[in-house]
Length: 417
Image (cartoon, rainbow, N blue to C red):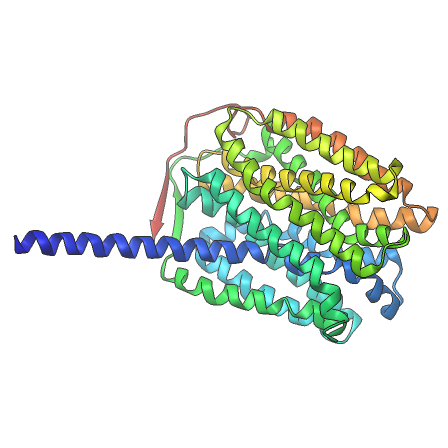
C-alpha cells in the first residue's frame, strides 16, 4: 500500500510538472507572438509626426515599414539553418534580446539610428515569424489550428494596441514619437524573461532521409505568394490608412484608433479561422470569403461614402484577421513535420515579405506623383484578386513535397539536449 501511494505521488508530481511546463511554454509563445507586430504597427499613426520633424518625403518615410520587410526577406530562409545549430529555444531567445536592442536603437535621437534600429527590429521579428509555426507543429501537432489561432490573437491584440496608444503615448503622455516607439522595449524585455525557462531545453532536428527542395514545389510557391500578398496589404494598411483617413478629415488620433479598431475586429476572426481550417479537408471556401471582405473594404474606401468608413474598416479587419491566420495555418496544414514547417515558413516569409516590401514604398510614391490616393488604393484591389488566385491553390488538400504532391512523412528525430 505504501509503495502504491508513493508511486501515485510520483506520477501526480510528474503530471503537475508536465502541465506547468506546458503552461509556461504556452505563455512564452503568446509573449513572443505579442512582439511580432507591436513594434511595427505602433509606427503608422506616428508617420505624420516623424515626417514633419525629420522633413522626410512620403517615399522615404515608407522605408521605415519596408526595412523590416527586407530584413524578413534576408533572414527568413537562413533561420531554419541557424535553428538546427543552436536549437529552437536559444534561437528565439537571441531574437528577443536583439528585438529589445533594436527598439532602443530606433528611439535614439538621430535619423540614422531610426533606420538602423528599424532594420534590427526586422531581423529579430523574422526569427519569431519563421519559428512559431514550426514550434507549434513540433510541440502541439494535434492542436495546430487552436494554437495558431491563439498566438495569432496575441499578435493582433498587441498590434492593435500599439496602433491605438502610439499617439496618446506621444502626445498625452509627453513621450514624443521617439519615446512612444521606444516604450515597446518593455514588452520585448518581458518576453525575454518569460522565455528564459525554455533555455533548459534544446531540441535539435536530425533528418535521416533526404527531402527534395521545397523551392521546386508549386504548392510551396502558392503558400508563399499567399503569405506575401496578405503581408503587402497588411503593411500598407498599417503605414498609410491613418494618413488616408486624416486627409479625409479625421483627426490623426482618431485615425490611429480607427486602425486599432480594424485590428481588434480581426481578433476573433484570427482565432476562429485556423480552427475551422484545421477541421476542413480544404480551405478554398475560407479563401473566397476572405477575398470578398478585402474587396468590400477597399472598394468601399474608393467609392463608398465617408460616413461608412467604419464599415469599410470592419470589412478590412475581418479580411486581415482571416488572411494572416490562414497563411500561418498553411505552414502546419501543408507539411508533415516541424522541419518542413520551418522551411516552408522560411521560404514563404523570405519571398513573401520581399514582395510585401514594395507595398508601402509604391503606395507612398504613387501618392507623391499623383497627389491622390485612388491609384494607391487600386494596388490593394489588384492584390486582393491575386490573393484569390494563389489562395485557391494553397487551399488544396495536399501536402508539401518537392513536386507538390502528397507523400509519406519523412523520418525525423527530435533530440533534446
